Length: 395
Image 1 (spheres, rainbow, N blue to C red):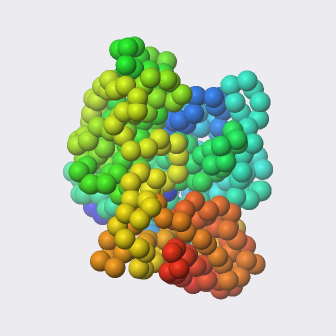
Image 2: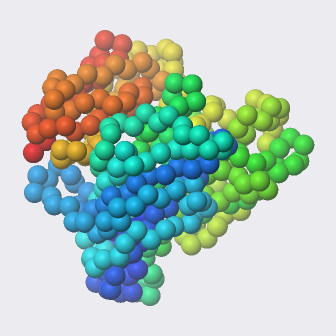
């Protein structure tokens, strides 16, 4: 069967129980919410109000005729901190052919969402907009065929560890939404215990699963999922597609301990890979402190003039055909004269018509956009005097 493809970006979980892989879904599709545990030790609650979950038949959002089908409309607030180590919560249930789903989007209401610290005080959050807006889940990869008796669950993960970041360094948090979606029949998990330099369990350690060439530059590694250790040093990062990864473990504000990158960690379908980690002394063996954000781990190596000057800029915008009220995003791929990708360079962004598209957050080579009105606008990224553009049409 051609079952649902994996999608990656930002937020929750559609679970489709499929008893017959030859015909898609039989019965009901369960809509569940899950979370990659929030990596900050000072946060008690992350409450996000989920308005609705929608699916489309194709991940090609450039198709102007594509329609979104609402599969869940919970209209309720969920504390994502409670959804740790692969836990889920049911948002709704509906009849839908799982084999026809190619894209997912989640509508949240930021006016009804909040973050609370351990002292019970509200944490300032820089939301892209006040009120409703949509977050899209993007296809990561196709899934293999399975035996007819294989149950299928399509999970959409709201990864808190990548969605909230202390951009300004003042204790406030900036919301940079990242949702990923996958069929858990093709996924496994990584779990274990982290100990500090004195061989004691490390609490509130940040755990990040990254993909990429383990022998290549950390600047080219991509974050896949995040988690954190509990008071006994235990962690579990669930819903990771089969493959080989780098696992990064970092102590949060624990003097004397360094962070560590463990390479060539194999994850298999339906299995949990045990990975116990003893942290090295500071500064450790990893390239940088990971706190949030999605996409390339661009603050590692490759900044400055390494790799030569920027010779080309290509802008990618997703989705390609957004609707009014959606969140959107863009990424600038920078290359040198030899065509090799460059990272860590300064990038400035502009939009030709701010009435159509508004820039809500700029994060180096990535930018978050708000789709405001129908029309056409061009978004441009410039680095070292070289520019690239992409035109977006909002129906």
